[in-house]
Image (cartoon, rainbow, N blue to C red; front, side):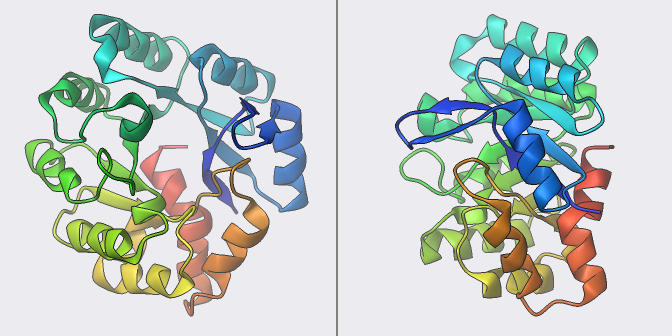
Length: 237
């Protein structure tokens, strides 16, 4: 079983990529991915994909904390009525620090609904891994997923592993992080149950993201956990 924890639907001209629900399903079929966690803007685009392929997609609601009460209402709607499985935040795009108090009402709702929060991690100044420590301390009962586990810079990757190793509610997600050796290190320092595979499709591709996990020097059972079992448990699929 393979579950992709990080995908998008939509058109992204800045990156010269796009993905429809149908094209994502095609890629999933090609690489034997059973289910994809997906999130996009607007959130109704995600809803359309989930409703079209309910057995293949699980949605996250993409939230900008700057929207205040509107963000709160979006979360309640998406989780209670649409059946979404968690919350997505992107501090780099929306310009806030992960540990700013503006984020706390979002985390309060995550705690209330008992859903994980996936947050972009790895770019200055807004989404560096060290800011996750305070958030994890304030909300020890909320599962926080570091998307990209520091992304492409070795200092940020090491920082993500460091912070996760001291905070049991932090999960590391592998997409966009180029070093297969760091996946194995993460399992050794953080725990194999707290590392999950993602492709970041269409910005990344499962062809190399899956292979990155497979060549990381882990056992077959460990690979199975990262490629699917852990994500199934975390998102209650």
